[in-house]
Amino acid sequence: MQNEPALSIAARVTLRLRDQGPATVNNLAQTLQVSRTSIENVLGTVTNTGTVIHKRASGAGVGRPSRSYEFNAEQGVVAGVDVGNSSIRVVIANTRGVVLADHIGAGVGGLPDGVSKLAAVVREVRTCLTQASIPNEKVRAVGLSLPGIVNEAGLVVTSVVIPEWSGVDIGSLLREALGVEVSVDNGVRLAAMAEHHLGAAQLINDVLYLSVGNRVAMGLILNGQPRRGTHNAAGDIGRLLFPGIQPGTGHISWASGENAAEVFSLARDGDAAARAELDEFVDRLARALSTLIMAVDPAKVVIGGGLTKAHEDFLNPLRANVTKRLQLPLVLPIVEARLGDEAAAHGALVLAFQKKSLGIYGVEGMTVPHITPL
Image 1 (tube, rainbow, N blue to C red):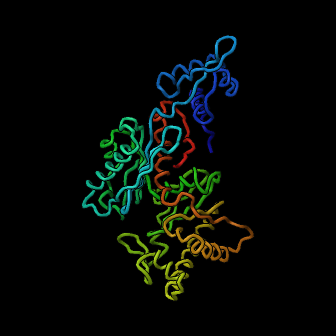
Image 2 (cartoon, rainbow, N blue to C red):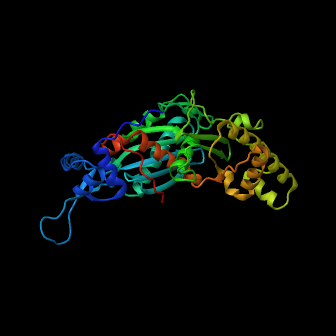
């Protein structure tokens, strides 16, 4: 792996103030081991752009008070948006990564065409901003999560859930509508990124994230980076795992109930058909997951998606089945996702900070802040 390029003094100063709080010129020069002159030159630039502000010194003493500077977290906001048939979730964070608003609106499933679905996304972003009393012009960047195969340029290659967007550059259209830079990626990949950045897989560089809900899909973090694959299709495994999945929607079909929640409820009440169906489902899922584990050899497996709402009724049998199949002299953590339904939207927030950091901060080389959810 190639070495990362050295950060500029401007990036080092801004990161220090953003992530560790206010500091004087002397503090910055000492901790960053850079001359006072260089620090003062950088501070002159970043205060002019509003990224850093001069903090008025307080307290009495002999001589002139030390000049103190702090990161301006209120200079702008970044939005993460997760689009689905049942809901659109919008989270908005300041430039320090603190989430200020978390809004859930109606999904795009009942809308007649791709144009109206795009308009719904714009509407929910505007609604979230209005409810949080944040002016539209404060938005610096948007990250968008959606179900489908998305290439590195943000083009939707195909989506069985929102087929009208297949082959469409949704990012460009949303950029025109909102007037800000937009980054787009697959929702499960972004959920994996969120769990890696602020969820159950923090500090773990090789993570297998499996989303099990209406559909089954996978996200991989390898060497700390999300795995896309040559054709941007890494993780699109649902229809290979389960022959009975509906081809048009990718939905899992249940025989003993209307949906997974009902099947779990019936099984808890002693329904033999529901119990047998769940046992078979877990067995098929464990077989597929064991194969994926042996292929990737992750340090941790994180299970997300709607079925995790069943908690240990689902996870305990899955862990036991996988352990029995692997027969390895090690304990592989298989844990429940921490962020639940919020994961993809927060992953979209991480994506926006990654892809559009220069536009957000006005400084080259800024890393993603620690995201603090509501």
